[in-house]
Image (cartoon, rainbow, N blue to C red; front, side, top):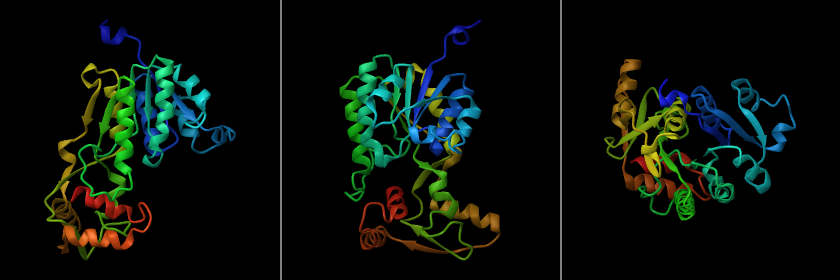
Length: 276
């Protein structure tokens, strides 16, 4: 038997396991043969028939009661594993500081993957319009590195379900059939990935020494498209040419500033600007 097949697999804790990406991470971890734990809030565990728990239990995950707000439960959970993966929404990104403290105190974690799973926050130029969206992620990176915690950052660019169902059209739930807005020149490439694929790639990194203390970019060649290329594909599918209305960067900025009175009120346009 090879060393790979005889070596004990990592024990993995997923924080944010009841979310869509978190659930995918749990299933991918279990499929790869890792003993997998899901940190679950008390309010969910209080309901044995909770619909968010059923898929986790059915997949074979071990449920641990706890949350980022309860340090003692967090520390107890972290002490049981070798790898910690966090998949909380970005609005809760700074709450990972408690998790970082628990990882540092536990001293047993060989790899921490924080909640990034998007664009590389150090490479985005967003003109101070993100209300700290990316700065929060950068702050977490600094905390991880200052504590000397072994880590991997996963940058998967754009999740398909946010932009592709409408072909990047604000206010629509499905692609248009007559006319379509093209943002920018239409030739900037974007990478669009699906949660299950992101989860599988992520799990592949946790025992790979090449990814230790590195940033991993997920860029499957078949998932890289510009706006014009996406529209070309849609036109071929529906056998119809759409009227393409081009929106310049200046027009999009004006639109964002005119609508956005609270953080992320015009969230889709914000993401569109990130790629254009």
